[in-house]
Length: 288
Image (cartoon, rainbow, N blue to C red; front, top):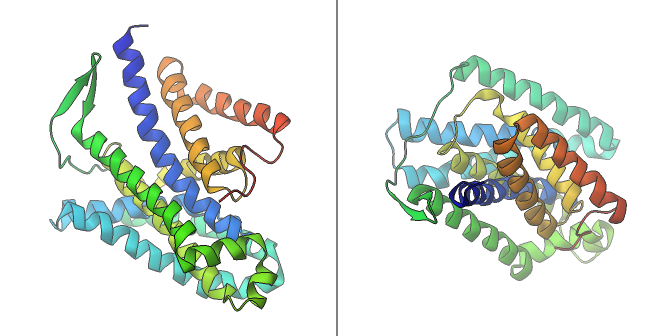
């Protein structure tokens, strides 16, 4: 294998890892705080990509503003879903909430096929040029997207560690009853967590949508990836979601390029099984 080919796959692995991490961090926040399995998470990822596509391609509005507006809209959508649909079901147990999120997968994806059609879309590059690294090509667009994702992930860690709302989210994740006795409004925290996690998925959709084709069916495969990462990294662990995203990103890049995407899935699941043998709770268990 030539060095430039190896470096190119490494660059792709880093980019994929960051995108996967964004989606998985959003999912692990929802699960860690609410204990709800959000199967429609990938559909919000898809909606975020389409929102930016319409904002920039169809309506001709500024790309960078759309990169903020799209996650913000999905943040509000997520809060509305949590308050209007999930919250009334939670007192009845997790099974009704699980059934609801599965139903949302079919509703949103089917609605996407009807509204957006089956033709794949693409968001034009807003940054041209690039740099040669050991014979491999790194476009400035991919570099900026990766740096932007790193800044957002760092911001999420800082938010959870330093802000009152972030500390309250961690407290609810650790022990909701004790957090409630300390005066934390757990319902409000659940609502913020669901919206925040949804916004991270939408942002990943926006960023990845500038590099790959956008289709209404892109949500479910990303949901599968996100669950793989969350299980690998540890249920409810944000650092685990970040590390798991990179592991799966490199597997998809190297194995998917050298062999096939199907084999990359198999290798990904095998990696999870092997790690869970030695670390049954994942790489990081509930470490925020």
